[in-house]
Image (cartoon, rainbow, N blue to C red; front, side):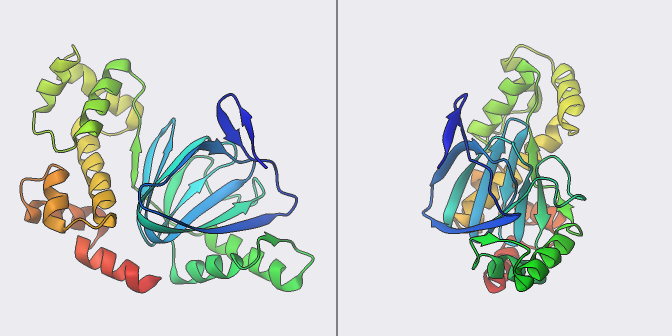
Length: 262
């Protein structure tokens, strides 16, 4: 059972080193903010998940997973039908993974290991086959490559206001200078805040927001042209060029590969 702690749902510790959960969610479903005493790897064989913490937003498309360290409060929103597969690991077992959230690539082998592990709600080392499976998953997890599908959150109040304006409407065509004036600050001031607090320029942050927003739209079934315009791109070709630079392929091939991967 879960319990509430300071407005956040906290789940009790597990008595086994690894536990799993397999669940299907309908489009638009939101898991409210909560945290776990265990480290968590959240993977979807279908659909796109958006994980939010106080530090930022991570959009998790197919063939990717999000690593959520123990005790990190987070919520998860679903775009499209989502088939979620989750590993819960005793905190610190995967020693090489960071102590902050990140999106990681999931290899074909790691995917098969996750799917096989989900046949066992609780795993322990007393069962020889489960012990081997745990060791192999840990080996794969500690060699995964993180990818830049994060939208870090600024701390400066004026920068937060600019971020909120853009998040409400990623297709807003106003100049960055005009957006900064709306919150009563110069573009230079807001730029400094974004670069210091997110390690991204305001322009790069806006571009990342549009990419992540477009992934949510595509997962929900929108056509590429519509997703491009809704995400703020003037033409589908401009959007496809940006997508290729960010993820190494076109949106169509990306999601086709993902469907064939599951």
